[in-house]
Length: 412
Image 1 (cartoon, rainbow, N blue to C red):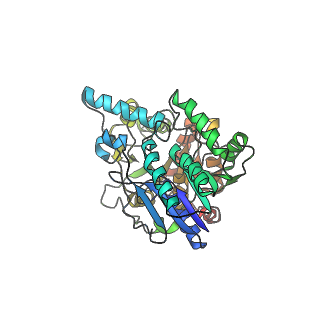
Image 2 (image 1 turned 135 degrees about the vertical axis):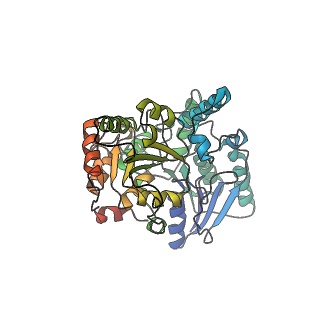
Image 3 (image 1 turned 90 degrees about the vertical axis):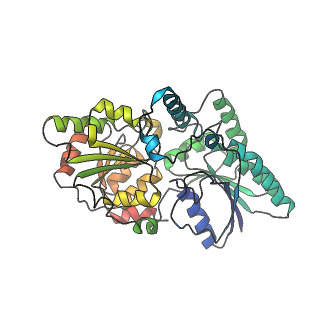
């Protein structure tokens, strides 16, 4: 079987979303499929140092005009992005970055919309060359992938699977921008209703998609992780640093969505009560999208107890997770995201470090999975529960025995 996979997120792009489609390509190849990947050029973007093996499938990386790169908004300068903006120009640029990341990243108008034109030309060229595909798989986001998936379905006469790593219109992180949301609603309906199948990452998301497209079968294919990627990382990242209890977060912070403020308030109370000192505990944030953190930290008055460490590569992120004393997992406390299971959660589950989950509770899919795996504390936004969990782990009770049988369900 010849398979065409369409995704922006593909190696060597250094992003958690990259792992899903790479795993699909790898295991489809192992099943005997002939895999071709249509993806964006990675020039000027953060690329992984991991040696991804792409030799078994054809990868078509297409250059395109990227407005984000053209404006100098690409993530990658970790320290600059983590720092508080200086001057009116810095504040304007930081505001534009925040607006893009909170409203438009993965939504229209998207940085990858211009990719549609060279990608459609390439698909037509492949058809003229006599190439054919039995199955097309496109992965949202961004929207361009599903638009290309439908286009490829028509010109090749192939079956099309529309994969949703996240929801499009109902995306809990990226709200979209009116009036483009009206266009997106029409485009999603007019395109995805023709899919031969839909796949997504959880039962809750499948329910939403099935209600929108009742005539298209929906299948759940959960996120997971590659054990060998994490196993190759060391667990001595902080060996040369002063001994402290380290709470680590690796990922993106979004205002009002993934909010560490409840933890900050608990730590501030513990410090004011003399239970902890500034030089005993530190909270470290690794990630490129941390524009809101300076304001949150300043409000909490935690000083040097909280540090923004900027962007790190995926292998360093694994080493940091394995070397930390406690992993901070953040999600928005909203009922519309109860079914979200991010790829980051599965990384956290695999390493031996316990998890402190804030924003999710035992009613959410993420909270239930953490509890089922006995991987840590699930606190919602309850500051008394967060305090109790912090005291438990700070007393040296951070050693846990995760249920490997649960974790191994998500091996790829």
